[in-house]
Length: 106
Image 1 (cartoon, rainbow, N blue to C red):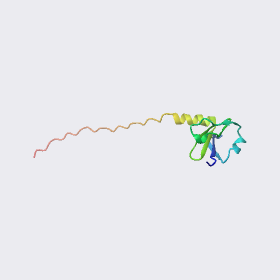
Image 2 (spheres, one colour):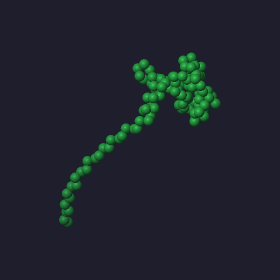
Image 3 (tube, rainbow, N blue to C red):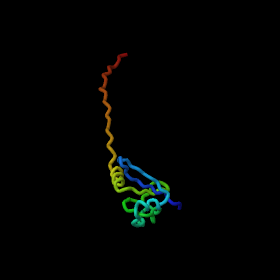
Image 4 (cartoon, rainbow, N blue to C red):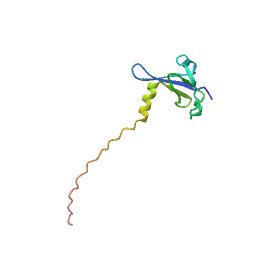
């Protein structure tokens, strides 16, 4: 299996969600310390990948991409994902009053 692309998703200074892709875990090891490896994921392709202090993950994010999120981003996106969809407003059509039709004698 080829080495997956590592995607780190964080929140920017202005509140926007930012993501950056890395080809290897070495660059991430310069910013975060590894505290273990994933050995219990139900997605078998994630098993054996590193777990980093200060990041939630690994989690799949498309074919060949492994995602790690900051705790704040994880909480925000989980709340958005789990929120019920907004209810649709029902638009009722006005019913027209029946018109009086008089039979025509013919």
